Length: 150
Image 1 (cartoon, rainbow, N blue to C red):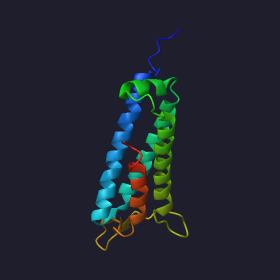
Image 2 (image 1 turned 180 degrees about the vertical axis):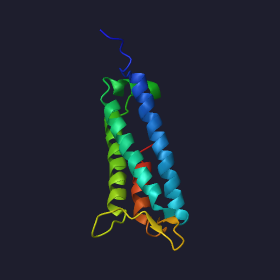
Image 3 (image 1 turned 180 degrees about the horizontal axis):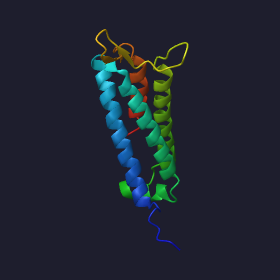
Image 4 (image 1 turned 30 degrees about the vertical axis):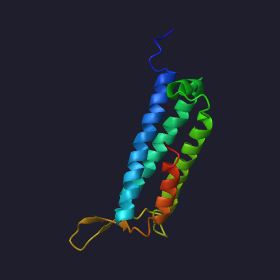
């Protein structure tokens, strides 16, 4: 038998899920706040979309760790914690936010190319933005996701 270096323990899974949740919460909160304050670059949304996708994929792997709920209950001293339900709510809200971004980044009608930048008269690449009003749907989805992470 080989040394189990790639095996994930309950402690590692619990810590990784929590840390990933806090990281993606921070990134989402920052973009959400920036979008409320004014125009925000479209590439920020695409970046968040990818981070959400990567985070959900990692959570799905970690959530399959045996006996994780019992371990989590012990760690936070809450025997009533329904980790599966809380996790599903968080994951589903992250997925909904990711999908909202994908569906709302403007694309070229003919080619489907994502519209993130234009070239100005001097040849400079200029990032396209969403106004605060255009990002209101994003904030609604972001708020729903953020509410799932305590």
